[in-house]
Image (cartoon, rainbow, N blue to C red; front, side):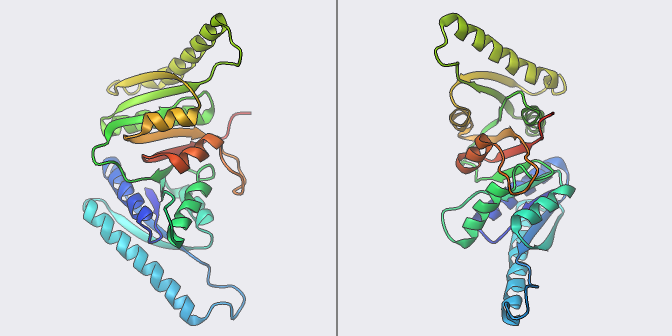
Length: 278
């Protein structure tokens, strides 16, 4: 099952479209979730009229999103659910039953667009499954999945996920290792560092590659900051996948690289958070 958060914003409809297309490829169902404020604070804070408006708005948002996804993919089974409370915490809880959690990217203005941005930044790193920050694709995206390769548990999980997505889509996989040489490295030191980075890249993808013989793989070792390198490589691609370190408490942020990519990536982004081994 794929869970997608919807809140009435355009960003959320883009997320719902992405989720239903992915569900069609995977042969799974979609659950559209809308999170509304809890309506049981101290007596008198909310009037009955406000409560009715909130419930009516929730019903409208879900009805509109359901109609939208059914127009996109009629064969995909889609359901809706209303949750209450903080949208980030509610979606994190909902992710326990999902294989993917999909949310909209931050928008350009308005309350619902700002809320979408808050969720996009607050959910990755805490969810129990990979989180997709959906964005509208260009008219003719390259059929490429881009994955940032690093040696952590999150990086390995991201590489595994990226291979599976590339196989599912019949896409080319670009495995990218971004690195910067140590300050003041001499020529021999630079060559040694470069060779070590290349070995890490090849080793990370090597143990997974055999399971996906039909995936065309492009390995790229690129000098530069990971954010800059991955933003450049993924521009116009179908999907960008990165791993991140999970932090545990829901108030903590995930990795700075993933955080930056959530804000600035121009294609759909998958963040996979895994706690590093002790």
